[in-house]
Image 1: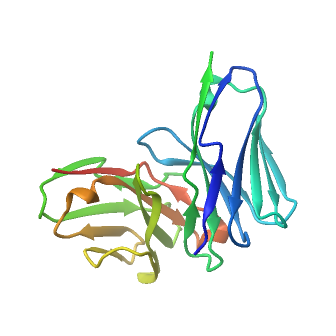
Image 2: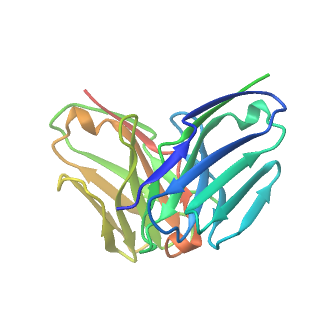
Amino acid sequence: SQELEQSPQSLIVQEGKNLTINCTSSKTLYGLYWYKQKYGEGLIFLMMLQKGGEEKSHEKITAKLDEKKQQSSLHITASQPSHAGIYLCGADSGSARQLTFGSGTQLTVLP
Amino acid sequence: KAGVTQTPRYLIKTRGQQVTLSCSPISGHRSVSWYQQTPGQGLQFLFEYFSETQRNKGNFPGRFSGRQFSNSRSEMNVSTLELGDSALYLCASSLQGASYGYTFGSGTRLTVV
């Protein structure tokens, strides 16, 4: 079965700093999803990447997919307290019928 | 348009009881998936329904079951509740599956005492 490893597990940054979260898969990535979650709440969709080399940006968040490395990265530029939360990567199993998730990265942004 | 709606938001049940959770997907979405989230195991896939048919099932005991109605609304049922079933249960809807992207609801927080 597919496994996703996220790093780091937790991250504390000063407001205004840039940061990167990585997600590495044990198997080929057919689709990679990034979600954000506030504790105890639902998942907020950030981005979906489906092609090797694909890069998407939304506001100050950029995600890239390196198919050969079976890895994706999420980069936040000039972080703000509103970026705080748990970031989760999820991968399509290939059957297109379920997602496997990483264990999450807890991001704290200090004002 | 309205998002994915899960009810109830919070639930407290006693060990041995059964519980039914409800999920209304985004209008037009025919795929509904259920996930369990716990601090120890993280997010785990339960099952996925499409047009009233279960297409995929995760590695959970038979006490966990679900169904989907003709209007795409879905319910999941957990019988003979155990303390370990305490979790956030999340529902996600999609047009047809992963390649179309999933939208998650706010979840139902189930506490078994």
